[in-house]
Amino acid sequence: MLSQTKVNRIVELLEQKELTRRQIAKRVGVSHTSVYAIASGRRGAHGHDPNQRPPVRTASRCPTCGVRVYLPCVACRARRFHIRTRRRGRPAAHLEAATCFAAPRSDRVA
Image (cartoon, rainbow, N blue to C red; front, side, top):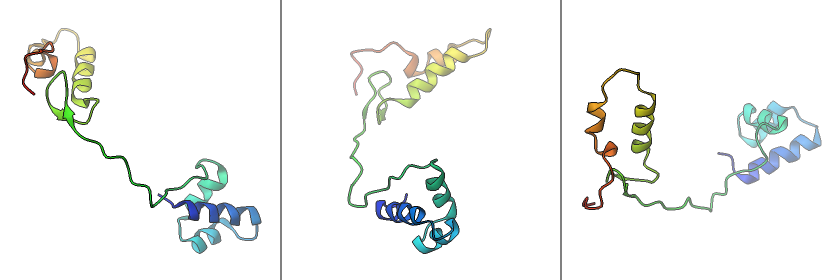
């Protein structure tokens, strides 16, 4: 991801209209496709702040299946999707045996 200072420099050089987009890319040290994206509006004039750290996420237990995941539980969602879209006439017995398809139990130990 480009830093905010590089994005600002690209926008500044584009507004001056003295250099081609490839020359701007070479001068700033980015790919010419990034300069084209900023110039055409496909990419906004925003950048990455190197001092800002991403938020820390902690894994927790899924209330449905008990697997330790970053919520929302993608495994439960995928299994529900699979049940909804399975072919008609196919037995779903093997799916019901999976823990995510069982009814949530309050006595499950996490």
